[in-house]
Image (cartoon, rainbow, N blue to C red):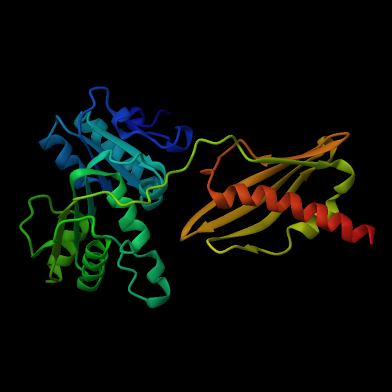
Length: 319
């Protein structure tokens, strides 16, 4: 059964990087992003109020994505596009620089516990990404019930030197009434609104390159199921990321193996398979074509590291 509104869904993993957001709409209109749209009330209201602007919603929840697609399809709204992904990562590494006219972030999770602080969307990496993808004069607006998170965001924005002085309003008027806004108002919590505009771009704006898929080849004589087991026993830790090889699935009749792999880079986690195909002379190690991850440094390293470990395990067996 077709999914309502599927024509508005953009599979970002199938697009080239850096991704130019002006490609979302044929007429090159200004594009505005909402990070984590939840049930989609805010995005629907904006898009219907300003039909000549383009809106992009990015969510990590498949349920939320399906609900928004259904919502805009039912309402006949044509100026919204939807992505299923981690918005923070897209901002930092995937979207083309200077391609967003504005970014909205409504009631992000404050991650109040200190051990979860790395997940807060107030850190230098995220703020740097925001300053890269916004056009000159583009705005960043945050609404939250957490004064601590608001102060952290305001501090990071100020330290970046790329934004105007933050305008902060306590209990701003709102006519949309999103789920969390209604909830916090019912509990008589204070709500804060922060708005800044971009004044300059930072020096270090780096997006992913559209490189070929990483792969490695080693002599088939170096490989056996036991060397693969040994090679995937321990996680790999680098300065900026970690790699964990979790499980191995094999089809011995076809000499093919899949290694379930997880990478984590500055809090951005990806799970995917590395495929091994054993030929008469060479063992090919590459990313499995189904559910391809973004080709980040950790993903590329996971393929090369596995090849190195298999070769090292084979040397140890010979000794």
